[in-house]
Image 1 (cartoon, rainbow, N blue to C red):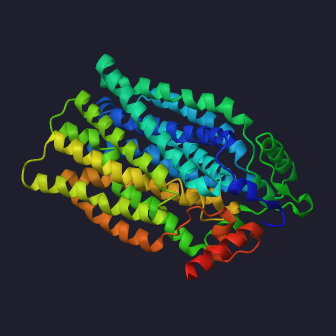
Image 2 (cartoon, rainbow, N blue to C red):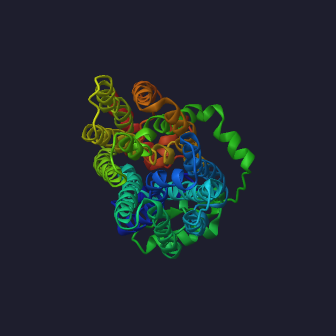
Image 3 (cartoon, helix red, strand yellow):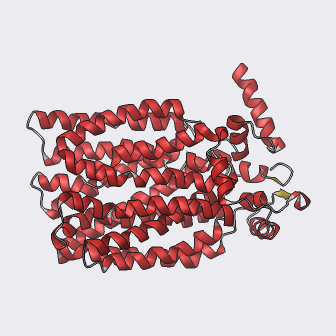
Length: 472
Protein backbone atom coordinates (compact mmCIF):
# COMPACT_ATOMS: atom_id res chain seq x y z
CA UNK A 1 0.00 0.00 0.00
CA UNK A 2 1.24 3.51 -0.80
CA UNK A 3 0.78 4.75 2.77
CA UNK A 4 2.82 1.86 4.23
CA UNK A 5 5.89 1.23 2.08
CA UNK A 6 7.37 2.98 -0.94
CA UNK A 7 8.60 0.13 -3.12
CA UNK A 8 10.22 2.36 -5.73
CA UNK A 9 13.78 1.38 -4.86
CA UNK A 10 12.84 -2.32 -5.02
CA UNK A 11 10.96 -1.98 -8.30
CA UNK A 12 13.50 0.19 -10.12
CA UNK A 13 16.82 -1.25 -8.93
CA UNK A 14 19.10 -3.44 -10.99
CA UNK A 15 19.44 -7.11 -10.15
CA UNK A 16 21.76 -7.38 -7.16
CA UNK A 17 23.47 -10.23 -5.34
CA UNK A 18 20.49 -10.40 -2.96
CA UNK A 19 18.12 -11.09 -5.86
CA UNK A 20 20.47 -13.69 -7.31
CA UNK A 21 20.79 -15.57 -4.02
CA UNK A 22 17.06 -15.50 -3.39
CA UNK A 23 16.31 -16.64 -6.94
CA UNK A 24 18.74 -19.55 -6.78
CA UNK A 25 17.53 -20.68 -3.36
CA UNK A 26 13.94 -20.53 -4.59
CA UNK A 27 14.77 -22.22 -7.90
CA UNK A 28 16.37 -25.19 -6.18
CA UNK A 29 12.81 -26.11 -5.17
CA UNK A 30 11.80 -26.69 -8.82
CA UNK A 31 15.15 -28.44 -9.32
CA UNK A 32 14.12 -30.89 -6.60
CA UNK A 33 10.65 -31.13 -8.11
CA UNK A 34 12.10 -32.09 -11.48
CA UNK A 35 14.51 -34.54 -9.91
CA UNK A 36 11.57 -36.33 -8.31
CA UNK A 37 9.03 -35.77 -11.06
CA UNK A 38 11.25 -37.06 -13.82
CA UNK A 39 12.52 -39.81 -11.63
CA UNK A 40 9.19 -41.14 -12.91
CA UNK A 41 10.74 -41.40 -16.38
CA UNK A 42 13.29 -43.79 -14.90
CA UNK A 43 10.88 -45.55 -12.53
CA UNK A 44 8.16 -45.89 -15.18
CA UNK A 45 10.22 -48.58 -16.86
CA UNK A 46 10.72 -50.45 -13.58
CA UNK A 47 7.70 -50.15 -11.29
CA UNK A 48 5.31 -51.80 -13.72
CA UNK A 49 7.59 -54.84 -13.75
CA UNK A 50 8.49 -54.87 -10.05
CA UNK A 51 4.95 -54.26 -8.79
CA UNK A 52 3.07 -56.12 -11.59
CA UNK A 53 1.01 -53.12 -12.70
CA UNK A 54 -1.12 -52.68 -15.82
CA UNK A 55 -0.56 -49.68 -18.11
CA UNK A 56 -3.45 -47.74 -16.58
CA UNK A 57 -2.45 -48.61 -13.00
CA UNK A 58 1.15 -47.61 -13.75
CA UNK A 59 -0.09 -44.22 -14.90
CA UNK A 60 -2.22 -43.79 -11.77
CA UNK A 61 0.56 -44.84 -9.38
CA UNK A 62 3.16 -42.60 -11.00
CA UNK A 63 0.70 -39.69 -11.15
CA UNK A 64 0.22 -39.82 -7.39
CA UNK A 65 3.09 -37.36 -7.19
CA UNK A 66 1.27 -34.81 -9.35
CA UNK A 67 -1.88 -35.12 -7.26
CA UNK A 68 0.22 -34.37 -4.19
CA UNK A 69 1.81 -31.29 -5.75
CA UNK A 70 -1.63 -29.99 -6.73
CA UNK A 71 -3.10 -30.40 -3.26
CA UNK A 72 0.04 -29.20 -1.50
CA UNK A 73 0.23 -26.08 -3.63
CA UNK A 74 -3.34 -25.03 -2.77
CA UNK A 75 -2.78 -25.71 0.93
CA UNK A 76 0.59 -23.97 0.76
CA UNK A 77 -0.98 -20.99 -0.99
CA UNK A 78 -3.51 -20.52 1.78
CA UNK A 79 -0.83 -20.90 4.45
CA UNK A 80 1.60 -18.63 2.61
CA UNK A 81 -0.93 -15.80 2.35
CA UNK A 82 -1.99 -16.10 5.99
CA UNK A 83 1.25 -16.90 7.82
CA UNK A 84 3.94 -15.68 5.43
CA UNK A 85 6.39 -17.04 2.88
CA UNK A 86 9.56 -17.55 4.91
CA UNK A 87 8.62 -20.30 7.39
CA UNK A 88 7.16 -22.49 4.65
CA UNK A 89 10.12 -21.62 2.43
CA UNK A 90 12.47 -23.06 5.06
CA UNK A 91 10.73 -26.04 6.64
CA UNK A 92 8.91 -27.62 3.69
CA UNK A 93 12.36 -28.89 2.70
CA UNK A 94 12.23 -31.44 5.53
CA UNK A 95 9.18 -33.12 4.05
CA UNK A 96 10.76 -33.08 0.61
CA UNK A 97 13.85 -34.92 1.87
CA UNK A 98 12.01 -37.47 4.03
CA UNK A 99 9.53 -38.56 1.38
CA UNK A 100 12.15 -38.72 -1.37
CA UNK A 101 13.95 -41.30 0.76
CA UNK A 102 10.72 -43.16 1.48
CA UNK A 103 9.90 -43.20 -2.25
CA UNK A 104 13.20 -44.98 -2.83
CA UNK A 105 12.15 -47.59 -0.26
CA UNK A 106 8.75 -48.32 -1.88
CA UNK A 107 7.83 -52.01 -1.72
CA UNK A 108 4.62 -52.12 -3.80
CA UNK A 109 2.40 -49.94 -5.95
CA UNK A 110 0.42 -48.57 -3.01
CA UNK A 111 3.47 -47.51 -1.01
CA UNK A 112 5.00 -45.93 -4.11
CA UNK A 113 1.80 -43.95 -4.67
CA UNK A 114 1.51 -42.82 -1.03
CA UNK A 115 5.14 -41.80 -0.55
CA UNK A 116 5.28 -39.88 -3.82
CA UNK A 117 1.94 -38.25 -3.03
CA UNK A 118 3.32 -36.72 0.17
CA UNK A 119 6.61 -35.87 -1.54
CA UNK A 120 4.60 -33.95 -4.11
CA UNK A 121 2.55 -32.24 -1.40
CA UNK A 122 5.63 -30.71 0.22
CA UNK A 123 6.99 -29.61 -3.13
CA UNK A 124 3.62 -28.00 -3.90
CA UNK A 125 3.85 -26.10 -0.62
CA UNK A 126 7.31 -24.92 -1.63
CA UNK A 127 6.03 -23.47 -4.89
CA UNK A 128 3.38 -21.45 -3.07
CA UNK A 129 6.02 -19.88 -0.82
CA UNK A 130 8.99 -19.51 -3.18
CA UNK A 131 7.32 -17.99 -6.26
CA UNK A 132 5.61 -15.12 -4.37
CA UNK A 133 8.79 -14.43 -2.40
CA UNK A 134 10.86 -13.99 -5.57
CA UNK A 135 8.12 -11.96 -7.26
CA UNK A 136 7.69 -9.60 -4.31
CA UNK A 137 11.39 -8.70 -4.21
CA UNK A 138 12.19 -8.76 -7.94
CA UNK A 139 12.75 -5.47 -9.83
CA UNK A 140 9.78 -4.76 -12.10
CA UNK A 141 11.87 -4.69 -15.27
CA UNK A 142 13.46 -8.09 -14.68
CA UNK A 143 10.80 -9.92 -12.68
CA UNK A 144 9.94 -12.16 -15.62
CA UNK A 145 13.58 -13.17 -16.00
CA UNK A 146 14.05 -13.94 -12.31
CA UNK A 147 10.83 -15.94 -12.09
CA UNK A 148 11.76 -17.78 -15.29
CA UNK A 149 14.93 -19.00 -13.61
CA UNK A 150 12.67 -21.34 -11.65
CA UNK A 151 12.03 -23.21 -14.90
CA UNK A 152 15.72 -23.17 -15.82
CA UNK A 153 16.52 -25.01 -12.61
CA UNK A 154 13.55 -27.31 -13.18
CA UNK A 155 15.04 -28.30 -16.53
CA UNK A 156 18.48 -28.73 -15.00
CA UNK A 157 16.88 -31.06 -12.47
CA UNK A 158 15.23 -32.94 -15.32
CA UNK A 159 18.51 -33.37 -17.15
CA UNK A 160 20.27 -34.35 -13.93
CA UNK A 161 17.79 -37.04 -12.93
CA UNK A 162 17.55 -38.53 -16.42
CA UNK A 163 21.32 -38.33 -16.88
CA UNK A 164 21.97 -39.97 -13.52
CA UNK A 165 19.26 -42.53 -14.24
CA UNK A 166 20.90 -43.22 -17.58
CA UNK A 167 24.28 -43.81 -15.96
CA UNK A 168 22.83 -45.90 -13.15
CA UNK A 169 20.79 -47.97 -15.60
CA UNK A 170 23.96 -48.82 -17.49
CA UNK A 171 25.74 -49.79 -14.25
CA UNK A 172 23.13 -51.43 -12.00
CA UNK A 173 20.15 -51.94 -14.32
CA UNK A 174 16.80 -50.17 -14.57
CA UNK A 175 15.20 -52.18 -11.75
CA UNK A 176 17.61 -50.67 -9.21
CA UNK A 177 18.53 -47.33 -10.80
CA UNK A 178 15.29 -45.54 -9.91
CA UNK A 179 15.73 -46.21 -6.17
CA UNK A 180 19.19 -44.64 -6.14
CA UNK A 181 17.83 -41.72 -8.17
CA UNK A 182 15.29 -40.93 -5.42
CA UNK A 183 17.93 -41.26 -2.69
CA UNK A 184 20.05 -38.65 -4.47
CA UNK A 185 16.95 -36.43 -4.75
CA UNK A 186 16.92 -36.02 -0.96
CA UNK A 187 20.21 -34.08 -0.96
CA UNK A 188 19.08 -30.67 -2.37
CA UNK A 189 16.28 -30.15 0.22
CA UNK A 190 18.68 -30.82 3.08
CA UNK A 191 21.07 -28.19 1.70
CA UNK A 192 18.17 -25.75 1.25
CA UNK A 193 17.11 -26.18 4.88
CA UNK A 194 20.45 -24.68 5.91
CA UNK A 195 20.76 -21.95 3.28
CA UNK A 196 17.23 -20.55 3.19
CA UNK A 197 17.30 -19.44 6.83
CA UNK A 198 19.16 -16.24 5.95
CA UNK A 199 16.50 -14.97 3.56
CA UNK A 200 14.02 -12.33 4.87
CA UNK A 201 10.26 -12.53 4.97
CA UNK A 202 8.53 -10.80 2.06
CA UNK A 203 8.34 -7.12 3.00
CA UNK A 204 5.24 -6.74 0.84
CA UNK A 205 3.42 -9.55 2.64
CA UNK A 206 4.56 -8.34 6.09
CA UNK A 207 3.36 -4.80 5.38
CA UNK A 208 0.01 -5.97 4.02
CA UNK A 209 -0.83 -8.08 7.08
CA UNK A 210 0.60 -5.50 9.48
CA UNK A 211 3.49 -7.52 10.89
CA UNK A 212 5.82 -4.68 11.95
CA UNK A 213 8.45 -7.04 13.35
CA UNK A 214 8.83 -8.85 10.04
CA UNK A 215 8.91 -5.53 8.18
CA UNK A 216 11.73 -4.31 10.42
CA UNK A 217 13.68 -7.52 9.91
CA UNK A 218 13.24 -7.29 6.15
CA UNK A 219 14.31 -3.63 6.08
CA UNK A 220 17.49 -4.41 8.05
CA UNK A 221 18.33 -7.23 5.64
CA UNK A 222 17.67 -5.03 2.61
CA UNK A 223 19.76 -2.17 3.99
CA UNK A 224 22.78 -4.47 4.02
CA UNK A 225 22.25 -4.92 0.28
CA UNK A 226 21.98 -1.19 -0.39
CA UNK A 227 18.19 -1.28 -0.68
CA UNK A 228 16.37 1.00 1.76
CA UNK A 229 12.62 1.25 1.11
CA UNK A 230 10.77 4.06 2.87
CA UNK A 231 8.44 2.63 5.50
CA UNK A 232 5.67 4.41 7.40
CA UNK A 233 5.37 2.17 10.45
CA UNK A 234 2.49 4.25 11.84
CA UNK A 235 0.37 3.23 8.87
CA UNK A 236 1.04 -0.48 9.31
CA UNK A 237 -1.86 -2.03 11.21
CA UNK A 238 -2.25 -5.72 11.97
CA UNK A 239 -4.80 -7.57 9.86
CA UNK A 240 -5.75 -11.22 10.19
CA UNK A 241 -7.84 -12.31 7.22
CA UNK A 242 -9.24 -15.82 7.53
CA UNK A 243 -8.88 -18.58 4.95
CA UNK A 244 -12.55 -18.09 4.14
CA UNK A 245 -12.09 -14.37 3.53
CA UNK A 246 -9.12 -14.98 1.25
CA UNK A 247 -10.98 -17.62 -0.73
CA UNK A 248 -14.01 -15.35 -1.05
CA UNK A 249 -11.84 -12.48 -2.28
CA UNK A 250 -9.93 -14.73 -4.69
CA UNK A 251 -13.08 -15.98 -6.40
CA UNK A 252 -14.86 -12.62 -6.37
CA UNK A 253 -15.92 -10.86 -9.57
CA UNK A 254 -13.00 -8.46 -9.16
CA UNK A 255 -10.56 -11.22 -10.07
CA UNK A 256 -12.72 -13.30 -12.41
CA UNK A 257 -10.44 -12.83 -15.41
CA UNK A 258 -7.32 -13.47 -13.33
CA UNK A 259 -8.81 -16.71 -12.02
CA UNK A 260 -9.69 -17.84 -15.55
CA UNK A 261 -6.28 -16.82 -16.93
CA UNK A 262 -4.24 -18.64 -14.29
CA UNK A 263 -6.52 -21.68 -14.53
CA UNK A 264 -5.96 -21.88 -18.27
CA UNK A 265 -2.18 -21.57 -18.05
CA UNK A 266 -2.04 -24.58 -15.75
CA UNK A 267 -4.82 -26.65 -17.31
CA UNK A 268 -3.86 -26.22 -20.96
CA UNK A 269 -0.22 -26.95 -20.21
CA UNK A 270 -1.12 -30.15 -18.33
CA UNK A 271 -3.35 -31.26 -21.20
CA UNK A 272 -0.58 -30.90 -23.79
CA UNK A 273 2.84 -31.53 -22.23
CA UNK A 274 2.59 -34.87 -20.45
CA UNK A 275 2.63 -37.06 -23.56
CA UNK A 276 6.23 -36.01 -24.09
CA UNK A 277 7.34 -35.13 -20.56
CA UNK A 278 6.38 -38.47 -19.02
CA UNK A 279 5.69 -40.94 -21.82
CA UNK A 280 8.62 -40.18 -24.13
CA UNK A 281 10.70 -43.06 -22.77
CA UNK A 282 7.78 -45.48 -23.08
CA UNK A 283 6.94 -44.35 -26.63
CA UNK A 284 10.55 -44.93 -27.63
CA UNK A 285 10.55 -48.29 -25.87
CA UNK A 286 7.41 -49.34 -27.77
CA UNK A 287 9.23 -48.52 -31.02
CA UNK A 288 11.97 -50.99 -30.12
CA UNK A 289 14.43 -48.87 -28.17
CA UNK A 290 16.22 -50.48 -25.24
CA UNK A 291 15.87 -49.03 -21.75
CA UNK A 292 19.23 -47.31 -22.17
CA UNK A 293 18.29 -45.92 -25.60
CA UNK A 294 14.91 -44.71 -24.31
CA UNK A 295 16.53 -42.77 -21.48
CA UNK A 296 19.16 -41.39 -23.85
CA UNK A 297 16.39 -40.14 -26.14
CA UNK A 298 14.58 -38.59 -23.17
CA UNK A 299 17.78 -36.84 -22.13
CA UNK A 300 18.17 -35.38 -25.63
CA UNK A 301 14.58 -34.12 -25.52
CA UNK A 302 15.12 -32.47 -22.14
CA UNK A 303 18.32 -30.74 -23.23
CA UNK A 304 16.66 -29.08 -26.22
CA UNK A 305 13.71 -28.11 -24.04
CA UNK A 306 16.15 -26.29 -21.80
CA UNK A 307 17.22 -24.10 -24.72
CA UNK A 308 13.58 -23.08 -25.14
CA UNK A 309 13.45 -22.11 -21.48
CA UNK A 310 16.58 -19.97 -21.88
CA UNK A 311 14.91 -18.15 -24.77
CA UNK A 312 11.99 -17.28 -22.51
CA UNK A 313 14.30 -16.11 -19.72
CA UNK A 314 15.57 -13.36 -22.01
CA UNK A 315 12.29 -12.74 -23.85
CA UNK A 316 9.77 -12.64 -20.99
CA UNK A 317 10.48 -9.00 -20.14
CA UNK A 318 10.87 -7.93 -23.77
CA UNK A 319 8.22 -9.74 -25.82
CA UNK A 320 5.89 -10.19 -22.88
CA UNK A 321 3.76 -13.00 -21.51
CA UNK A 322 0.94 -12.78 -24.06
CA UNK A 323 3.02 -13.39 -27.19
CA UNK A 324 5.17 -16.11 -25.64
CA UNK A 325 2.22 -18.09 -24.32
CA UNK A 326 0.25 -17.89 -27.55
CA UNK A 327 3.23 -18.98 -29.65
CA UNK A 328 4.13 -21.68 -27.17
CA UNK A 329 0.78 -23.39 -27.45
CA UNK A 330 0.15 -22.80 -31.16
CA UNK A 331 3.55 -23.73 -32.58
CA UNK A 332 3.85 -26.86 -30.45
CA UNK A 333 1.15 -28.48 -32.60
CA UNK A 334 3.52 -28.56 -35.60
CA UNK A 335 6.04 -31.23 -34.49
CA UNK A 336 3.18 -33.38 -33.19
CA UNK A 337 1.44 -33.08 -36.56
CA UNK A 338 4.62 -34.27 -38.27
CA UNK A 339 4.67 -37.35 -36.06
CA UNK A 340 0.98 -38.03 -36.66
CA UNK A 341 1.43 -37.92 -40.43
CA UNK A 342 4.50 -40.15 -40.13
CA UNK A 343 2.44 -42.64 -38.14
CA UNK A 344 -0.31 -42.70 -40.76
CA UNK A 345 2.30 -43.24 -43.49
CA UNK A 346 4.00 -46.01 -41.53
CA UNK A 347 7.36 -44.22 -41.31
CA UNK A 348 7.41 -43.41 -37.60
CA UNK A 349 10.94 -44.03 -36.31
CA UNK A 350 12.99 -43.54 -33.16
CA UNK A 351 15.15 -40.70 -34.61
CA UNK A 352 12.04 -38.87 -35.88
CA UNK A 353 10.28 -39.19 -32.52
CA UNK A 354 13.32 -37.87 -30.66
CA UNK A 355 13.68 -34.96 -33.10
CA UNK A 356 10.01 -33.91 -33.03
CA UNK A 357 9.55 -34.45 -29.31
CA UNK A 358 12.67 -32.32 -28.78
CA UNK A 359 11.23 -29.54 -30.94
CA UNK A 360 7.92 -29.81 -29.08
CA UNK A 361 9.75 -29.48 -25.78
CA UNK A 362 11.70 -26.45 -26.99
CA UNK A 363 8.44 -24.68 -27.89
CA UNK A 364 5.88 -25.92 -25.38
CA UNK A 365 8.01 -26.38 -22.29
CA UNK A 366 10.32 -23.51 -23.23
CA UNK A 367 7.61 -20.90 -23.73
CA UNK A 368 4.47 -22.12 -21.94
CA UNK A 369 6.16 -24.19 -19.26
CA UNK A 370 8.27 -21.26 -18.16
CA UNK A 371 5.18 -19.08 -17.83
CA UNK A 372 3.85 -21.43 -15.15
CA UNK A 373 6.07 -19.44 -12.78
CA UNK A 374 5.38 -15.91 -13.99
CA UNK A 375 1.78 -14.57 -14.28
CA UNK A 376 0.64 -16.55 -11.22
CA UNK A 377 3.15 -14.57 -9.19
CA UNK A 378 2.00 -11.24 -10.63
CA UNK A 379 -1.68 -10.81 -11.47
CA UNK A 380 -3.14 -11.14 -7.95
CA UNK A 381 -2.50 -8.79 -5.01
CA UNK A 382 0.00 -9.69 -2.29
CA UNK A 383 -2.61 -11.13 0.08
CA UNK A 384 -3.74 -13.61 -2.59
CA UNK A 385 -0.48 -14.29 -4.44
CA UNK A 386 0.30 -17.58 -2.72
CA UNK A 387 -3.17 -18.89 -3.50
CA UNK A 388 -2.72 -17.76 -7.10
CA UNK A 389 0.36 -19.96 -7.42
CA UNK A 390 -1.53 -22.82 -5.78
CA UNK A 391 -4.45 -22.32 -8.17
CA UNK A 392 -2.13 -22.68 -11.18
CA UNK A 393 -0.39 -25.76 -9.76
CA UNK A 394 -3.75 -27.34 -8.93
CA UNK A 395 -4.42 -27.73 -12.64
CA UNK A 396 -0.88 -28.01 -13.97
CA UNK A 397 -0.28 -31.05 -11.76
CA UNK A 398 -3.81 -32.12 -10.83
CA UNK A 399 -4.78 -32.76 -14.44
CA UNK A 400 -1.68 -34.89 -14.99
CA UNK A 401 -3.47 -37.93 -13.56
CA UNK A 402 -6.40 -37.91 -16.02
CA UNK A 403 -4.04 -36.88 -18.84
CA UNK A 404 -1.70 -39.81 -18.23
CA UNK A 405 -4.63 -42.21 -17.96
CA UNK A 406 -6.09 -40.80 -21.17
CA UNK A 407 -2.81 -41.28 -23.04
CA UNK A 408 -2.62 -44.87 -21.83
CA UNK A 409 -6.17 -45.45 -23.09
CA UNK A 410 -5.81 -43.66 -26.44
CA UNK A 411 -2.48 -45.07 -27.55
CA UNK A 412 0.25 -43.17 -29.38
CA UNK A 413 -1.55 -42.15 -32.59
CA UNK A 414 -4.76 -40.90 -31.00
CA UNK A 415 -2.77 -39.17 -28.26
CA UNK A 416 -0.82 -37.25 -30.90
CA UNK A 417 -4.04 -36.15 -32.59
CA UNK A 418 -5.54 -35.16 -29.25
CA UNK A 419 -2.50 -33.04 -28.35
CA UNK A 420 -2.55 -31.29 -31.72
CA UNK A 421 -6.19 -30.23 -31.32
CA UNK A 422 -5.80 -29.15 -27.69
CA UNK A 423 -2.65 -27.12 -28.45
CA UNK A 424 -4.43 -25.09 -31.13
CA UNK A 425 -7.47 -24.46 -28.92
CA UNK A 426 -5.20 -23.58 -26.01
CA UNK A 427 -3.39 -20.92 -28.05
CA UNK A 428 -6.63 -19.16 -28.99
CA UNK A 429 -8.06 -19.16 -25.47
CA UNK A 430 -4.76 -18.07 -23.93
CA UNK A 431 -4.54 -15.11 -26.29
CA UNK A 432 -7.93 -13.75 -25.23
CA UNK A 433 -7.58 -14.43 -21.50
CA UNK A 434 -4.00 -13.30 -20.91
CA UNK A 435 -3.04 -10.16 -18.99
CA UNK A 436 0.22 -8.51 -20.02
CA UNK A 437 2.39 -7.71 -17.01
CA UNK A 438 5.88 -7.19 -18.41
CA UNK A 439 7.97 -4.52 -16.66
CA UNK A 440 5.07 -3.38 -14.44
CA UNK A 441 5.42 -2.95 -10.65
CA UNK A 442 3.12 -5.37 -8.86
CA UNK A 443 0.96 -2.53 -7.54
CA UNK A 444 0.59 -1.10 -11.04
CA UNK A 445 -0.70 -4.44 -12.28
CA UNK A 446 -3.48 -4.29 -9.70
CA UNK A 447 -4.31 -0.71 -10.60
CA UNK A 448 -4.43 -1.44 -14.30
CA UNK A 449 -6.53 -4.59 -14.22
CA UNK A 450 -8.70 -4.19 -11.13
CA UNK A 451 -8.73 -0.45 -10.40
CA UNK A 452 -7.46 -1.10 -6.86
CA UNK A 453 -6.37 1.96 -4.94
CA UNK A 454 -3.43 2.34 -2.62
CA UNK A 455 -0.87 2.33 -5.39
CA UNK A 456 2.49 4.07 -4.79
CA UNK A 457 2.77 7.56 -6.26
CA UNK A 458 5.71 6.62 -8.49
CA UNK A 459 3.67 3.79 -9.98
CA UNK A 460 0.80 6.17 -10.65
CA UNK A 461 3.23 8.30 -12.63
CA UNK A 462 4.24 5.25 -14.65
CA UNK A 463 0.60 4.48 -15.42
CA UNK A 464 -0.10 8.08 -16.45
CA UNK A 465 2.96 8.16 -18.69
CA UNK A 466 2.01 4.82 -20.21
CA UNK A 467 -1.51 6.02 -21.00
CA UNK A 468 -0.14 9.23 -22.51
CA UNK A 469 2.21 7.21 -24.71
CA UNK A 470 -0.65 5.00 -25.84
CA UNK A 471 -2.50 8.08 -27.07
CA UNK A 472 0.44 9.28 -29.16
